[in-house]
Amino acid sequence: MENEDKNMKVSFTPNPQGAMRVLAFLVLASLFIFLGARTWREVREARSFAPQNVITISGKGSIFATPDIGQVVISVVREQKTASDAQREATTAANKVIEFVESKGVKKEDIKTDYSIYPKYNYTQDRGQVLTGYEVRQSITVKIRDLDSISGILSGVVERGANEVGNLSFTIDNPDALKAEARVKAIKDAKEKAEALSKELGVRLGRIINFNESEGGIPPPIFYEARSLGIGGAAPAPSPVINPGENEIISNVSVTYEIR
Image (cartoon, rainbow, N blue to C red; front, side, top):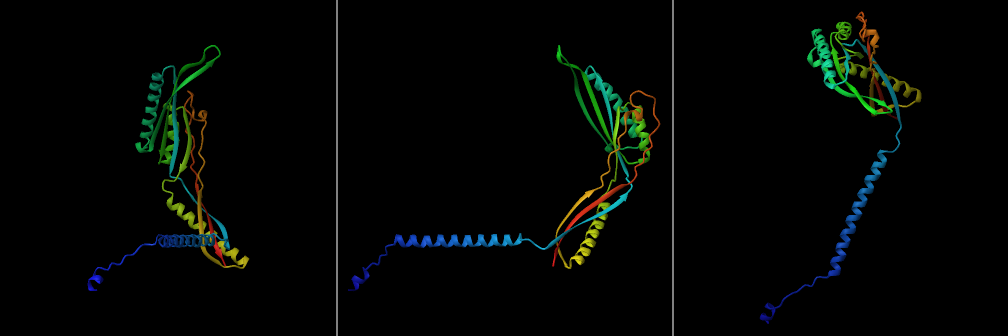
């Protein structure tokens, strides 16, 4: 009897259908959990985008300051039948212009040169498009920090061969502090408007939920006609009177408040 107990074996036969039911249950449970979490997230997002009681107020602040930098574009343009001849004439004149500008105290890092060569064509009915020569243009952008020297520079570069002088503009070298001051004024303006409006509406201001800022006050460039500077072989013209005036630095803000 003891030998029979020792030789007795217990065997287990897995049930494939039961395993499949357990697996299907786990899959469905995971799917329900995923869909529930997704639905809850969508509900939260919908609540966050729900309409709120808000008012949006604009404010403006401005600061006037005297520019401390002038910038002008000086161009030397030459046309000849060959590119080499045009280059030689343009280079000779441009070098004289740059040398003169530097003699007026302008540093090399404040002088930027752009150089280009263009073919010139003429169209005839018999021959069609015919190459007639080349144009060399050397444009020199000069940043002038001594504003008192601008008038003399404008006249002097023309006498040394410049054909075009224009795009004169005045800027402020380090405007960040002035921009910040204008922004403070704009925010104060918006806040005062919001407080006055809230009293008129009988509501209380809550937290700020949105803020935007845009800057303005870019001065327009000043243009000079060639003839006003004696360009084109005429006798040297008197130095033009240059007045930089004042630049207005503007900050425009938009502030959105919750209201209760």
